Image 1 (cartoon, rainbow, N blue to C red):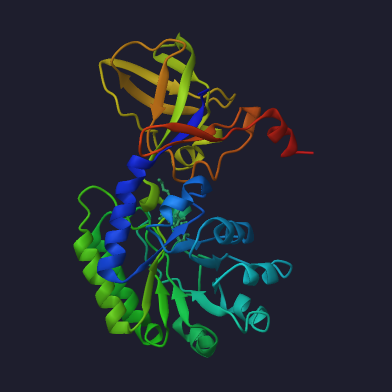
Image 2 (cartoon, helix red, strand yellow; image 1 turned 90 degrees about the horizontal axis):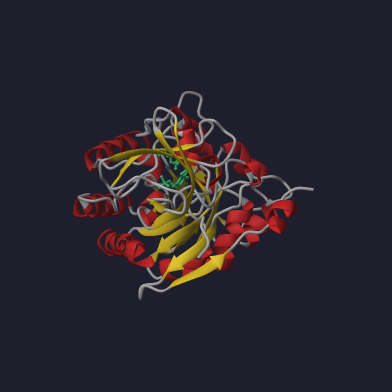
Length: 363
Ligand SMILES: Cc1ncc(COP(=O)(O)O)c(C=O)c1O
Ligand SMILES: NCCCCNCC[C@H](N)C(=O)O
């Protein structure tokens, strides 16, 4: 297969799915895939055996969820437009408004729909200002219980999303306690509560049993159906970005230029100033660089067992989350194709991109 391509390995996706299924069974919570993180629908058939549906951040994600992922479709957006609302309602099971203002604006249009409201508890686990839903002056959800009280009869659920790559169960527990303390009297008047994404419960060593017990207790004490919206947790470590070395040079360090671009194909790493991950090790230090003209288009510095040379293949690890959904046509660099490794080890190409796709994205 011609590089670059994202390779989704079902045998690496499966353990995440099995943990999600275990958690559902032992907590009673439902799990919705957050399409903003991962929307590669060729593996939705498999994922839908372990998950209950999808949640979204736009009309197009709502439509994709309804069309490609069996189960429930939750529609959330920071703000819906007038021209979108009918289609959003037609393609979803629940609509979650970000503010009381949006709920009021679309009150009549959505009257026969199951409706919820995003609530911002003012606490989060994000170490990144950019991704912190509880940052000062955050627009993400209603903050004040007093503003929510007047619209309680119009909604049947809340969505809280305040975790971010949170691998610490005790921190999750403490934040849920604080949510219950501040918003408990409102939560108990609802039928369902989504606790959002950002809980790293499929990670190595995460105390899944404690999470299941906590979610079950939350659900029983408040008499609500709990939803989780895993993005990263659903697909973590399932995918690699397969690239080839095109050139090498020495400029005080060993540099290898590959047929991909961090700016175009793994943008989140650049945004959050994180390094890509490799699996191999050795005593040869190399900086792996992208082929766009951006000076800082660098995947990171890694150790290899031997010196790299043109033609070498490299697998960049953990390349599923916020990658394929964010890839772009910067520099006209060819987008990586998408391939799937089936459980029996066979690989198949499910999407390739051509010059025509590049040209069609512009006019
Ligand atoms: C409302 C909501 N739900 C779920 C997610 C998924 O988060 P993660 O990929 O960290 O699990 C996000 C991330 O932006 C979100 O904003
Ligand atoms: N790896 C660096 C942080 C990534 C942030 N995750 C994506 C966004 C997140 N789900 C959010 O904005 O809440």
